[in-house]
Image (cartoon, rainbow, N blue to C red; front, side, top):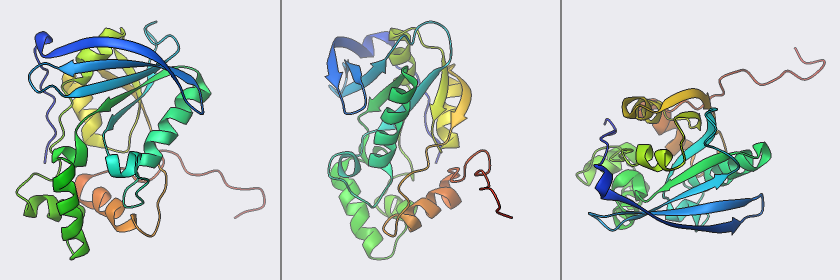
Length: 217
């Protein structure tokens, strides 16, 4: 269930162009990349000066059309995307990489098949495996050349996934800090989130305890 950190050769990823992208939280610069071998298009949303050598607040976000676009409550992906952009906007500096690897790397249609199996009783890991896939097929090799485009070598990475941190380290990208991104736990995704914690090692509690209110024991 490991996640690959294999770095593609330089000629496999093309930087194409950029434009201004106003959002409800800030005006980002949207950068487009294309994988030459697959034609897959990947994005980077950048705010502020991220190439000055200081660790950059960052999110490496894998595409989740159902959560990011269709507002699905079966996962926390859409809320993580929004939460990460808000955090970057609040800080005035950061980058979000949007990688096109739907369904932990199995694709949109297979993710819907996996959802159907979950409705029949499988958990999110079992459903992927019943379809003949690994629990998590995502790869992160594209992250390094994408970050190099902006001169970024060190991240304050917004993630709950220790495997993603390990993948960055194997790529030679320093993770100076992990920033928890705990959002949108609800009745529809509680079992999913618990399974990710139990079977995939996701860290579903903050690094530091929540502050105690005055007068509380």
